[in-house]
Image 1 (cartoon, protein in one colour):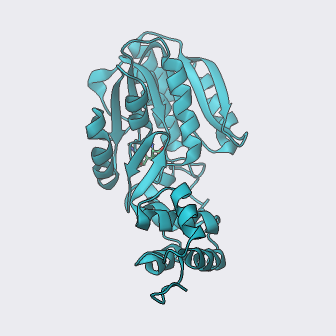
Image 2 (tube, protein in one colour):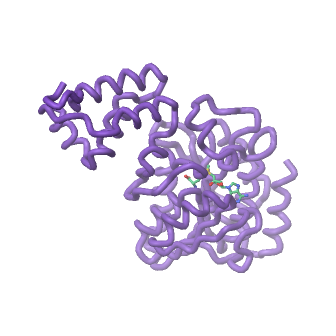
Image 3 (spheres, protein in one colour):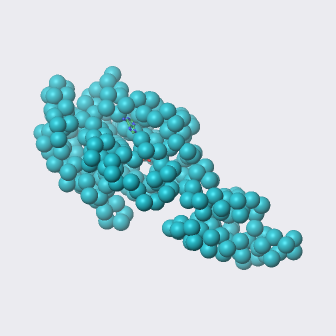
Length: 301
Ligand SMILES: C[S@@+](CC[C@H](N)C(=O)[O-])C[C@H]1O[C@@H](n2cnc3c(N)ncnc32)[C@H](O)[C@@H]1O
């Protein structure tokens, strides 16, 4: 206890860790520290220094810990998701960007090396994590982002407009027809969870919007297939398509791309945990009509 009878910061963080662990939060100590950092407006180094002294727990700390113990996502409580170099505003109605997606962005950035003014589109942008990172990290890039949900679109507008991204509210299946055949890169992290595969974690099942999770159809592959068809429509010949997916979907997606006859260099990429996480391909044909016809074939699974 401190002189004012409030628990010390160190005691409060210890107690919060126990409360969060009992609630089944996967990283209780980290979350307890992040909530304290958020309230105090300090980073981890300063927090740890304060915990060595007899600083009191910040006002309202127990309330935030109680919210987190209800399995409300940490990012909804703090209002911020850290993604690569960005601090994105997030909250109810938008998918919380995941660390795995950072490696998908890296694939795009590597591909854009040496291109002076590349044109890129992110299909299903959510908070704008992918589009915003590319706009931030690739000087000279012209970046577009498409989002269907009005709630996610509102969060994306907050995050992307200051970065100069062209944000469009629309369906990735038919968005941006006036830009057909003009993008150097199409990137997407579409919804891809099968209808019956309800996620176990309450943070995901109850707080990520269903429109961001379920890809459509029993295997979840309707929207990923549509994203590939749109990529074939939107890319310049030789343009690069990269799409995130679940570990178990890599073979299906590679086969789906091969079947269209539109793509070369189909390649699976692993994430930082060594799991298949994304597939990329290069558009091998130039005629737009062929692409439209062949692209629609991808939907007859
Ligand atoms: C898995 S989340 C990914 C969000 C973000 N790109 C990221 O990586 O954090 C999929 C996103 O696609 C959006 N979405 C779902 N169906 C869509 C559609 N038909 N057209 C455009 N966006 C769609 C969802 O609202 C959600 O924001």
